[in-house]
Image 1: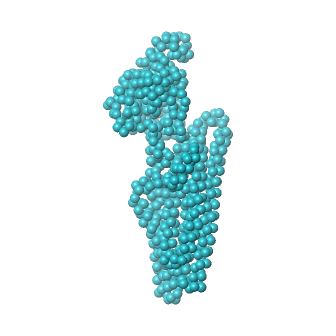
Image 2 (image 1 turned 90 degrees about the horizontal axis):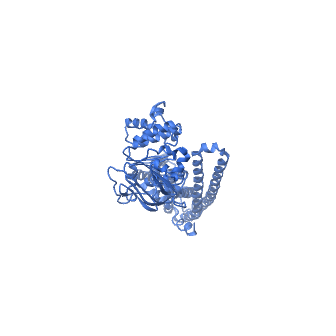
Image 3 (image 1 turned 180 degrees about the horizontal axis):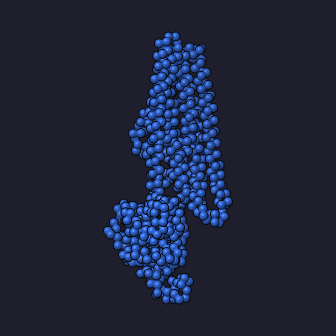
Length: 593
């Protein structure tokens, strides 16, 4: 990163990222207004206490009468009551506003994340995204719910106290103003360093969380290879790196606190010295005025000191919001055009790949190289070929997870770039090799294919996918919780449930990416019959390394190095002596030829 990149945008407004919170606050003007009113009442009653103390000293104690003493203490009690009520109201509405803003921001962040294209997550790990949604948002929540309330209260107290002090004794107020300037100067100087260190610490922590997420997702692999010690050491190193940066940030804040407290103590002593001369030597102030001024000076100095603490939190939150804003500002590269072209209703499923070339972002080399393929509506096409030939990429492009760098992909004559990705995906049902499922019940996972699916439809899909036999043995049947990512099921059971989910969707285009790879021979035979029924009348694309699963395809397309090298049915391809014949010979033996 160049020098300009690191300095120009960062040094503009240090708190610019916090401006992103204002629309969320403005959306709840009622709570914000009530919080502001109670805040003003709380600050006003705090300053009012100094008037009550002055009245008590000058009129109550000096009068030596019970009536005056009672009246001054009654005034003090009234002001204290107002302070208690307004403080409680301020606490409730500010914290409620903070919780509401944080909840809205968390929802907006997730809304943005789920719309980002696959290419974005090639650059940013899922664990880092989760860190921003949890750790960074917790920092923002602390600011909005607590720090802002403290900072606003202290800021109003400081300015209110200074205003009253000017009315009481303008000359002495000059000393206090000088103290405030001396305290604020180091706050801004040290605050920049605190913010930079906060961003660095949060980034280091996100790296650690991202690595932890990867290893926990693959914990079985970690343990199977006996790498527990090494991954724990690597995580510990990442945590220590984050710790070192955090200690530097804490040290900067501690130095700022020491400096502020020293200036506050010295300033209060100076004010007391000058005020004592005015009362006892020059006799230009009453004892009550002295008490009031000292209380106001202490309030002002204490408020500035607390602002120093709050300023550090504000800088830390600015760093957190900067990281959150990176996601909020991220624009998906795959999105609907301003005026998307509508697909035919219903979608027929005629698919054309026309001179398509594609390379994954950040990777060298084409995965598809001038790839051409026409799949007619209702046709069952199998894609076969060695690993890396680009078979799964064909499905990803068809689902418009990515756009090709060259060429075009047509669905019923409509270029996918001109259509809404949501409409494209609504016409397709995918069963992938990994068969990712979600926590919840089997019914929840089946209904993920179509939210409005009836119980009867779920049952038929489970039966068609040969999943009902094992689902009915569960304690609660299809409503039994399956655990995180359905880990209580075997690989084959999860695969059958994923196939059932696709059948529930009842889409005109069926995409099967190694859909039967986790099944044994017996279940594969049963599933093949179910899939054959499901593919009837639908455009179907089947990817399989096991050639036994593609024998019934209307057409087999053989891919190599991102291109179509052969096409036909099993018998003619097996006799052709090409790549398919070699693959068939390896799997079926010499008899296949």
